[in-house]
Amino acid sequence: MERRATLSCRNRDHGCRQGSVPYADDLIGTPRVGSHALGGASCSMHESVPTTELPPRPSALGIASLRPTLTGTRHMVSANHHLAAQAAFQILEAGGNAVDAGVCGGLVLGVVQSDIVNIAGVAPIMLHLARDRTTLTIDGLGTWPRAASVELFHQHHCGHIPRGVLRTVVPAAPCAWITALSRFGTMSFADVAAAAIRFADEGFPMYPLMAESLAAQRDRLAEWPSTAAMYLPGGRPPQPGERFVQSDLAGTLRHMVDEERAARARGGDREAGLAVARDAFYRGDIAARIADAQARQGGLLTREDLAGFQTRIEPPVAIRAFGLEVSGCGPWCQGPTLLQTLRLLEGIDLRRMGHNSADYIHAVIEALKLAFVDRETYFGDPRFIDVPLARLLSDEHARTQRQRIDMRRAAAAPPSGDAPPRCADTSYIAVVDREGNAFSATPSDSAFDAPVVPGTGLVPSFRGCQSWGIPGHPSAVAPGKRPRLTPNPAIAFGPDGSIMPFGSPGGDVQPQAMLQVLLNLQVFGMTPQAAVEAPRFATFSFPDSFEPHAILPGRLTLESRVDDGVARDLAARGHDVQWWPQWAVVSRVVV
Image 1: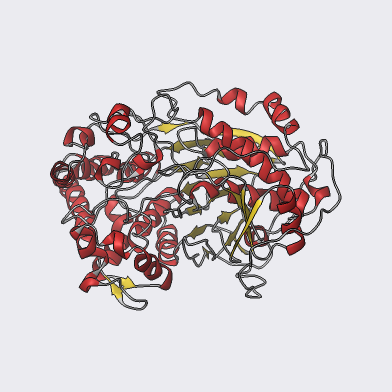
Image 2 (image 1 turned 90 degrees about the vertical axis):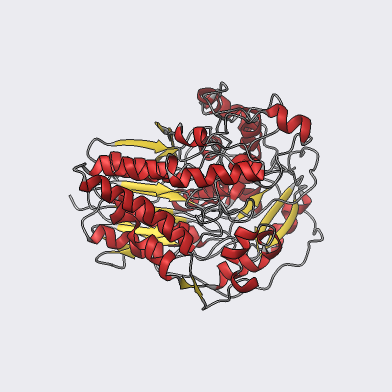
């Protein structure tokens, strides 16, 4: 039976990241996408409301579509940077599987997007293994050091987790990549790291979005001499077109490769070599440099924390909705938020409302707000707290929540915080190979919140900023506990056997963007490219996942391609409507 992959990707953001050139073999022009009718009860409708004053919105660019939908017959890759997609595709062409290619591309993202993805950051992964038809997750998320405690932050930092080394959790990405490669891949670390080492050692042309990102964060980068030396060469941010070299980062990756090769030369097999490459990071010279830097700068992370770390392999959380089986990561991240919202919306006749009508946007936003309330109330590391996930994803809970949506008025928002939501520091890569294996990963962590470890090119994961320094919060700090992560890769399965790894940058916008792409596909019958490029919207009327966990009550942000009349209608219902520029949010879709 022929397997086909259809790929779409989108080059737009709200201050986040540029899209990539997708790679597929044997490109053909016709996508294979189904449209699924919706059943269930409908929400009440109402007439248009009087005109409401809106803020001015950015001018439109007149862009109809960025790329055609691409379809291949063997394998496909989509990533947030074209060099990552290219490197992963070359692995597939060389005979590697989706895991080999995904790890290769993920490492490249940590080089060519090192402002927002760190080799020593987080890397949650979801895999589908075609041979035994199993789907699993690798959390790729570090834990708090043994010396951490909620009392430390509550008593000495007023319940906040300050910028700098005190936010550091164990870097999980290297362990996640190598675990995926060892358990489910076919290649060595040297094979999959070669492209990343090349781009770090020889450099790559600085591109406008990364240059803009570094320029915008210049003052923060200059706070730490080791960070300034790496990202402000010559005392200034690199300019577009200039070669950007990261020699120390290349040396870190090359050291791991050298240790692996030495182990193989001693007679070790592939798995033994990968274990030694991992130990080079968590038990060897790299770990020593990280721990020594932490000790000098007043951090909590020790060599013992690094040596004792192991990423976790867990089953996904899965539901059926809108004609798909959708698998997400567990409540140690925000993955179930997407699943809850899908369950809630399945009982509403969204098709009848019309795409991006005022009723449609209002219903989706109100459903998301309800799901985010549950996220704030219940989500956290399930090894430490009891998360009632079965109840939250139940039919009964969906019905109860659905009845709380008032189609005439936006729900009341909690009190406001003291800072606007921040931009995400995240990327994404998706791979489907010729056997039907699928790889979905959302690597992340920026260069702006903690110092580079001298001589390594690494910023150890700062994801402690997604914990709370407040006793009793489900995501409160505790030794060995995982923060509640925003990155949340997913995979959807169609009734025809199609596989769609999908994900998005965007912090708290991630599940909102992913939701809208699925609804565009399944409710409105769009092609993958059209589904990804359609105008989007997002709510920020809940506690932000990042410190200081601010709230913007009632905030609803619309891409500027949404109709003015729709925006006025939404404002009259009580939404605080603001505008994004058009092409404002990033998502990658592979079917």
